[in-house]
Length: 212
Image 1 (cartoon, one colour):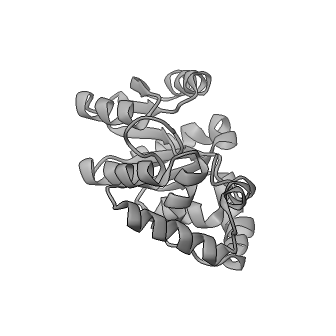
Image 2 (cartoon, rainbow, N blue to C red):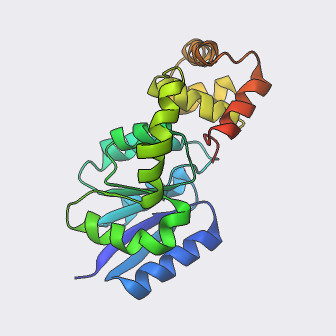
């Protein structure tokens, strides 16, 4: 039986490489591709599939990416296994991704060597963490995260979207919260991290891999 996959990533060359890998080395077929959250949700409605492989960060459009996107996928398609590919290297963010219920989590640099293993594992109901993810969580990410003040999932997502170029008003619209709430969550996160201004937010996001 051919495994039907939807593949989402905003980089067409990366999608092409992943598609070729999957279709040449597994019993799988990519039945639809998406380059944004909007395209992804459209594909999920149009094409029945057994697996979703998606990037974590796909900026642009009217639908938020990241944790908000994963939450929406979980609500709309609760039985669909999801494998997330990312370049995020922050332990706290990675833990939040796992807490969102994804079945597989991979660093993009591991994808070409380990993606076929991930697909096989997830297709058989098992979970899969790539070697890069295990390293970040077990050795670097978890220890690094424990040294940082703990942000809530919502604070982390607001900070990431803001650092990615969205305004507080735009974030409020995407996350269906009030501008006042988003502004408070942004300030709470900044206070916890000791960030004094917006430039500090951008610098923190780059340093901790939140933008990737």
